[in-house]
Image 1: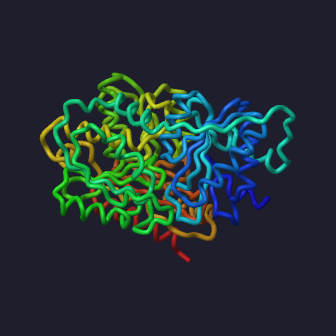
Image 2: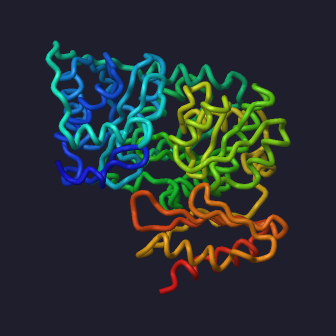
Image 3: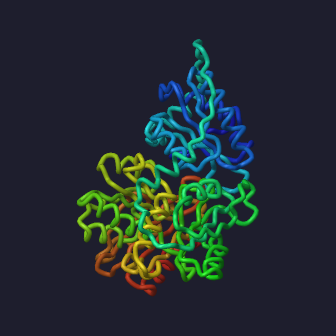
Length: 451
């Protein structure tokens, strides 16, 4: 059944269709998922990729073959699937490859209440069961039914953010031909928003640009449209619309760390003294601002299963990642780019100034952004960097996730971590000023890329 090791990642299943991921694997995954969770019913949703419906249908065949009923929510964003799992209290399966190119597809799984399923929380067990052959079931098969949850999803989000007193806003949204084009109109309905839609046509071939807004080139159209239309803000969603990137009224890209800090202060105002989780690549400004607002910052590894687990353990009210994943206790500890966007719109609309002015206090340091380097041996390249910095006065090193090197007195840090899915090392560097950041960034890149 193909090389399952290639497609089973740390927290999802993802691969090229049909070479690596096909309906037979999806069907076996459906059967194994039911056995591992003991579910009597499962809810599914899928994105707009051509391969998504066949994979979702195959998964449903597998799940019903084990006696579980399947409720199909149909087209949806990943956070819509989390809403369905949370509100129905059922395990869920989302068919999407998120920001990956058109030839990919994948499967994100969660237990009832949108609790994550990762390598150590069920995904490894599912893989083993598929490899060994899923045991048969001799009871009655389950049934398949359809349920539209889009209206409920949109209404629920608007109960979590007070938008009743915001001023009228002109908002450009680039959906990248992904699921934002399906969910944004419903969520924005009834709000004082002049929506300027870009690429809302659902098209899994991504004819305009990749639905991956972490890459700056994929935000250029949005930046130009914000400037051209004199909009107050621009929002860009990835393919499955669980991440949201923000562009200010000048057309400048806003760091997801600044959004994390802004939303954190809003959640701390509602829930004083709470914990806020941030991954180790977010700006140093995030834990500083959380502490200044009476919260407890909690540092964690990169990846949604780690963030969600840490949030559940600490009861954190909110969590943010450098990649524009934003997690909310009030949303079953799950991530929702749309909910983060509503928080930003509320903060912007509750005052009269521009977004750039509102966010100034949340942006304190110069950051490199994430820079990828292709390497033959990730471990050897990282070890070379560690050796170069170890022993320098004032330098501290930790390995919570990859290699983090910091010099508090000099005011800089960087993290170098391997990609889970490609032969890449990812560098993030930050310092108190642009020149220091650039010097550290260039020194590390020279070591990593040295032949």
